[in-house]
Length: 380
Image 1 (spheres, rainbow, N blue to C red):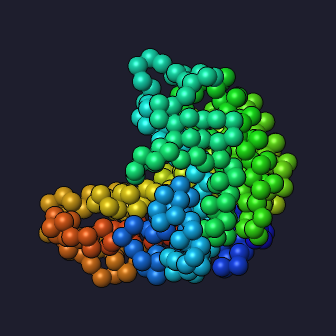
Image 2: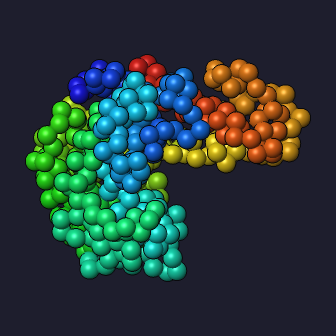
Image 3: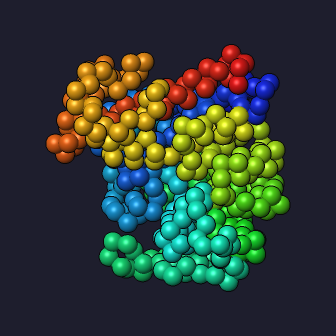
């Protein structure tokens, strides 16, 4: 993998770049759609390519559970298996440590949208999730499929990702909860840093390895992690973990992190990608970011347009002859009316989800394309 910054903004930390892999180039900044189980739900890989998607990220944990990395390797790796010709990433499984553990226990996500009761910090140094055991060398848990006991640590994560064969892989880390107190995060950070050093030692493949910065919402820990991970010979960097209780906190975290990361290497913000976040994260210096929002919302009938989100399951659209978005150049907007798409949703036809997924991904990629153009013209 090679990465080159081709233009710096003189108004922010935003930059234009080109990421080169053996499976093609990616113009950055770029949105990365999520292909959890080696597919973007409802679409074929050829259909995803038509949405201007340049790079996908698949899920190490889910592919380990089914079909298993041995099967994927036997089928000549993820690219051949899913017939995706362009670059691919795999995450490390670290997020599942959180989602199956403290995330499930407390019903919160990476950005805290509510505080249970009056408490803002409920997980202290020796806390353990109910169904996950976090150990010095990895994480023990039971499969959500068959209840079988599983263990994943740095060695296991890298071995799985090497078998899957994506162009870019990530270090194994602990994605912490926004409800974790300072003492918990400090201890977790030490553990994660050790895991990441181990990933560097273990990796034998030519895949690009991205280290992950943690530290939660605490400035000193974020800066410590960014300086430490930024000083290791990773090919790029992920900004991970919980991102606080608000978008302002998320911006602060990025502002604390970026100055400590090598400017010549790419930065990926893990799991964030609402439209309203994009300019902010790109101006903070982020090159890549992944999110399930456009595909997740599409399957629930929500279309993203220049006039806002449209709920295509509403009866009012049954008499609407307009396309989803008059300015959109995707094949859906060029061929189908709002009326038809609403009919499909009401009839519970799976084609409705396919059409909205196509549109939403195209819309997202066009939106980021517009931001790249703003950087190019010097207005962002």
